[in-house]
Each structure stands twice: as structure tokens, then as C-alpha cells.
Image 1 (cartoon, one colour):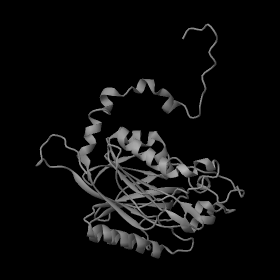
Image 2 (cartoon, one colour; image 1 turned 180 degrees about the horizontal axis):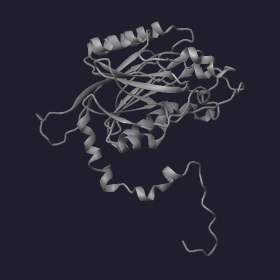
Image 3 (tube, helix red, strand yellow; image 1 turned 120 degrees about the vertical axis):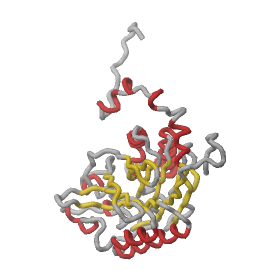
Image 4 (tube, helix red, strand yellow; image 1 turned 180 degrees about the vertical axis):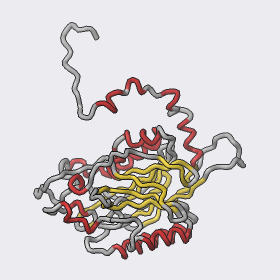
Amino acid sequence: MTADDGDGPDAARRMLRVAAGQLGPVGRDEPRSSVVARLIALLDRAADRGVELVAFPELALTTFFPRWYTEELSGHDHYFETEMPGPETKPLFDAAASHGIGFSLGYAELTPDGHRYNTTILVDGAGGEVARFRKVHIPGHEDDEPWRPFQHLERRYFEESDQGFGVWPAFGGLVGMATCNDRRWPETYREMGLQGVELILIGYNTPIHYAPDPGQNALQGFHNALVMQAGAYQNGTWVVGVAKGGTEEGVESLAQSAIIAPSGQIVAQAVTSGDELVVADCDLDWCRHYKETLFDFARYRRPEVYRRITTQKGVEVPPPRHEGAEP
């Protein structure tokens, strides 16, 4: 899907064929080798369709282990990767390089100095690392809450990244990354938008049941699309949202992986909750139709009146207005 920019039918365009490599559930005891084989199968299908870049989900290599509490913080360390690629993940890198396809992959990272991050790596078509992104907005809770039907202990097992949202020249454009809950925050997209981002890759694991407010359950799919479409449109960028969906260890998770244009339109979307490849041709030059018009930041932004965004964390309610005071 492309937009006419008036350059004529023969004008060269920066076209990138991108895929969302959606996964179905990953069982608690499913070995890495099995998951990697599933990822390679999606890469093989992508190669058959001429795809140049595949985005894989958050925590793609394992089940979503933060749903279980362990007494020791290290109790889930066997789900973490201490190197990337490691012996079990190298076949994925080799397969991608053999096809000349780049990919992004979400996984649990345990650093040599003992830090635990929810990480996404971006890999080029030769199998080399372009960048790493570590999740910024960590949802859930830190302590054991056994009253929940399942827990969401991300804040126990992962640290918040202080590296922010980078953008990297890659695949003929400017590429950024975010992870799951990051997609719900407008600052995520604007931080990358201010760096000229043209393609954002977002992996997620989203349970449909939300224990603190079950009234939101029916709106999970709507909210998922809403935030990514708004982020794409308001920053003139392509967005690829890719899920690990289906019912995993008894927990139903959202699928609905989608590729979204700079116009905010969904141009391709998953139709299953299992392993599925969603493909679209992304015209990176389409981004400038929004970056250079309605969302021309240099012309229209007013950072001097946005001070609360970077100086204030919680809500500060204005004081009551006294009767007779000047408006």
C-alpha cells in the first residue's frame, strides 16, 4: 500500500517488505530448540515471499514466566539468555543470514553483571547485531499476590531500562523498537518521532484477562490497535505490532498482530492466534506525507508549554479556584 506524493509513477521509492512473525503459545516446558525451529519455519516462509525484515514477539523464546512467583529472584533465571546468540539461538541467526533476512527478537536478558532486562535485539540481513532495546515501561507488580488467577510479576523479574528509545539507520530507513506496555505510552512514539523514525517494531505478550480491572478485558483488542494506530499517525511512521497469542499455560493472550501505515491505517493483520506470518510492503517515503505536513515538528511543536511531560511523574491536581478570582 502506497501513497501518491506527486513524484510521478517512475520515481524511485524506498520500499521495504516487512513481516510480523506471530507466535502461538509456548509451553512452560517447551525447549528452546523447538521454539527456534518454529521461528526458522516463519523465516523460511518469509524468504519465499521476498520479505526483508521479520519482527518476532516479546519473550519469544519462552513461556511468559512472570505469571509465576518464585521465592528467590533467580528462580526463573533458566528462562533468561546470557548471550545472544547462544548455542540454542545461533541456528536462527544462521537461517536468517542464509536467507539475507533481518529480524527483531524479544527475549529475557541476564547480563554478565547480573541485570535482568526484557530485551529486543535487531539483527541485519547478514546476521549481525544492529541494536538492542530494553523495555522502559515495566507493568505489573513486584510482590506475591496469590489472589490473582495468574500473576503479572514483570516488575519483580525485570529492571526498567534507563536507555530510552533509540532509532537506528537500518534496512534503508530509520528503525526503532519498543516492547509491549511501551506501546501504550504516547511518549514512546514521540521520543522516536523526534529522531525521524520511519518504522517501529513492537513485540507483545498481552493477557486478555486484566485482574485489576476486568472491565477492560473486552477492550484489549481495541486498545491494542488504538495505541499503535495513534502512534503511527501522530509521528508519521510505520508500526509493526507482533504478538505471542493464544492460550498459554491456561492464560488466554491477545493475538491480532498488525502492520500499520503512517496514516494510522492497518494494512495487514493476523487472522489466527497461532504461528502466522503477516506481510506488507512498507513505503518508507510515505512517512514524509505526515512528517512534512500536519506533524511538521519543527514548525508546529511547542516544547516550551509541554514542561509537565518531562518534569512531573504523578498527577498534580490544580488548586480549587476561589470565587471571584480572575480567570
